[in-house]
Image (cartoon, rainbow, N blue to C red; front, side, top):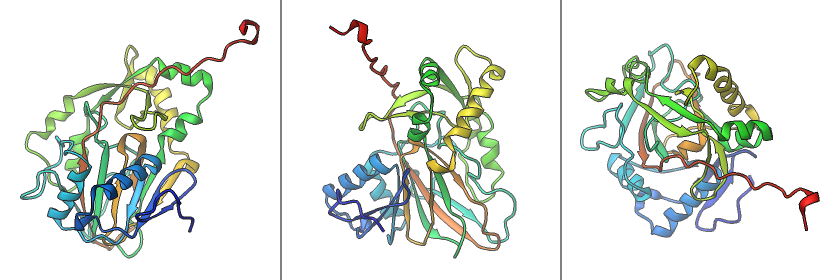
Amino acid sequence: MLRDPRFERFEVLPMTGALGAEIRGVDLGSDPEDAVFADVKRALDHFHVLAVRDQSLDAAKLHRVARRFGPFSGNPVHAGIEGFDDIVRFVREKDDTGKVIGEDWHMDLAWMERPPGTTMLYGEEVPPVGGDTCFSSLEHAYRALSPRMRELLGGLTGVFSGRGVFAENAAHKGLALRTGGIAVEDLEREHPIICRHPVTGTRYVFVASTLSRFKGMTEAESRPIIDYLMKLATRPEFNCRLRWAKGTLGMWANPYVLHTAINDYPGYRREMYRTTVEGVPPLAALPEPQETPVSQAA
């Protein structure tokens, strides 16, 4: 596999040409020096999805690792495990049927004022095959837009809604919810549609399944554009697929990707632990510089 030569403290192996990388040769649970975590963060800023292999993390170690990246983002829907309010346990038993949690393309908590900047998911027990997670790049979605569509979307503000979120999560018996979490049904948050990465400055489309409408437009008027953006954002050439193994710590830059869980492991048990790191409010992209017409250049 191709190794990224910009990283010397551990191996960084790109997954696809669009996004994603595996990291090998580092033990985050052993409390390495700050420079190691800085390099992991640098890899995350570039690849947006990381699979850190061969980790051995219990709840306490996962908590410590996550907090080295920043404070907990908060989670008004899911209840944490005993002793760790920031860690959520996801379990699907081998005889469970129906949809898995997160089966549709989505972004975590996009309707919060500060959507999580990083989501971390640790594989405690995974199927021998199946149960992968797919991701898609919202930066590549932006690059695929025509100049006129970029101009149109640059003037739009999205209204993101928590409507239906609590009921969807309550349908899964292996997931604990917060008391009073149903209040998220009434939450709405406005975010710009064309945003920029706070570190790299790269533009991306801030679109998610919880985008209900655009400010100043009805849902009926907004829906065709939202559907188009979701279809564009999940094109296969913008994807990578994270294949889980026991001891894999998956990390993704939540506002810059969509992700979906693959429901292809009937008869197997899957147990994962998730936490999130606080992000920043999505930043509206600055206007793109306009070329000076030749007739005016002097």
